[in-house]
Amino acid sequence: MKNRTRSQTAAVPLSGLLRKSDGRRSFRTVGLFAGIGGLDLGLTKAGHSSSHLCEIDPSARAVLARRFPEIHLHDDIRTLRGLPQDTDVLVAGFPCQDLSQAGLTGGIAGARSGLVAEVFRLLRRQRVPWLVLENVPFMLQLAGGEALETIVRTLERLGYLWAYRVVDTRAFGLPQRRRRVLLVASLEDDPRTVLFGQDAGEPEDGPFAGRACGFYWTEGVRGLGWAVDAVPTLKGGSTVGVPSPPAIWLPDGRIVTPDLRDAERLQGFKADWTKPAEAVVRGSFRWKLVGNAVSVPVARWLGESLASPRAFALQGVRELVQPGAWPTNAWNVGDGRFTADLSEFPVRRKRKSLEAFLRYEPKLLSQKATAGFLARMEKGNLRFPPGFIDALKRHLRAVARAA
Image 1 (cartoon, rainbow, N blue to C red):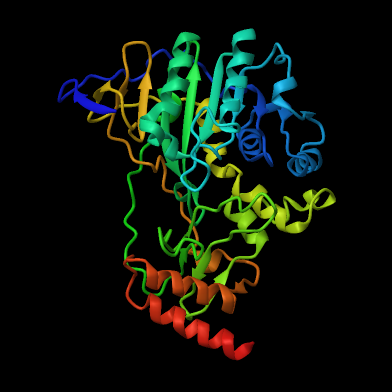
Image 2 (tube, rainbow, N blue to C red; image 1 turned 135 degrees about the horizontal axis):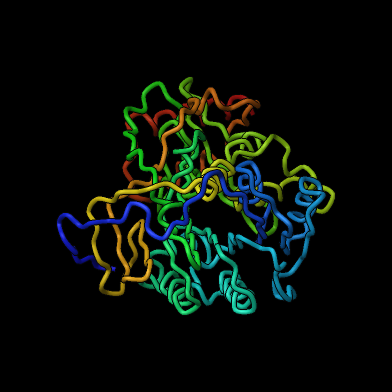
């Protein structure tokens, strides 16, 4: 969307439509497209309680059954007839495969991501006070912003006030550069008090010398996926269980891939959180479960903000007046669509360096993988940090000798 400045000193309400409360609020939640429970675990840690979870993947359901044994578990949203009457918050991290830059890019009408229509079917049968949606930021620009336009237009027709914000997992103490859209909608309250009450500002990456750097060795021609002192976004891998972990250039010169248990920890789960999936699928499929999950600390921050909404003051408020790619935050609380100057870091919690974070022995990137990555690099025209190509060549010689 193109922006039009409403005024240089736009007055923004500090409390919006928020109902006053003397204490923290505790909500009853229902989780759709629950995956391995990242959203639900984070909300539970924030003091909310989940009554029902819905997930179609048998391996993910095996994890949910073990980790949330007391919660009712349904398999297919398409056969879910309705929501419990006492539902306060409906949570849905709906499938991103058709919206992801690395995925099918089929758009909101794609076979998987189009399942968000089932969320609206349930809401038409029973309005719930709050809705939380989560997805990848590529949805903001795919097909000129059509995916998000479809979602928010439907919410407006259903009577919901909405706001969204892109947040980065690094803000919450984990060394993973993972950007996600959090959309919060409410029938009565101002969702901006949940998403906009904190802003710590974007940090500087700083020099990479002496620090571990993550990158994707599977994207050597079209993109490096580089991250300083962090890994790039963990991905789901293939549908047949071929993992797609990032690589890490360690300060000692080694090129490695993290252990799966550290990948789980990079999402905020305990090590071996997805182990129960091995009763259904082989272990390599666990990478897909981890890569598709919602980072637990992100969900916990969201849950804490739902429990204790904050007053907010926004800078650079601009009206959105024309269709197109969406900005990294926006809202409509009943008087039009707007955006403001907000970073993707609501907070900046202290985090360990990537090298110190890794608890389990990583695996050296193989000779075949390293050679293939170098070959793709030579075909592309990407720019690389100083010393990176030389480090890859030294690593290739070392693993070749070891082989």
